[in-house]
Image: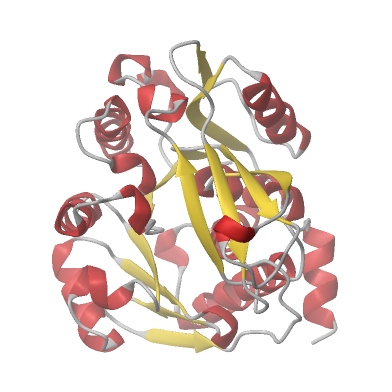
Length: 321
């Protein structure tokens, strides 16, 4: 069975106890484990698959908490390194009444940025495995950016599936042109790319999803997944595209919903024993409908890693719709 590896940041999301309040006016926060790559690994693991996280945490209480939490949901943490040079990353969040959010990161630097290329072991990856990453850990002139390049090079050489979810966090990128060029650079090595409706025009230069798909396929990816929040998702290949409507739920916190979607998509594919080459139009629809369900479930809960559903929860949700 294929193994799944997510790479990048694991962090603590501090979720506000106040809703519809600017971050500066929030009166208190609740600690929740998160970080997009760790969230995706949690979603994959909770669906009964082999999932590992590659990253670095501080030698501090928050790092201990994240390792324990990831292990508790079934993520293999053997590739989690620790350092005393910096603390574990923290993100403070403000929430709107519709579940949308604003972030403020404490990361100058944080431990996740100090993962070095020589700490990536070539023997971690086997043919058929999946490597997934985001743009948060691709900030210029950091060791972790170079580590991503090494991991991707190994994964491509070993015929692994490479999945890129930009997951844009503009506060971390003072130079937006550098963010866009980084996304374009790293997508050339991706087999699958997921982009949300809020990210599409920034990355591709057009709000037209069909034109964006043509642009993306010219850059390298073979599959483009376009997510639209509660409105569902579309999957594009050079030969076909399909759409699955979203599910209506009472959104409490959308943090991690996109990660649950991607983890649900990849986790189901792994559970089914399928590869990208097996995705035809019928199976593509099945995958994104399942992924929509995972995202909807998580948006109706608070937090990310701890909110990921297991297979029985997703199947029950789909049966009820």
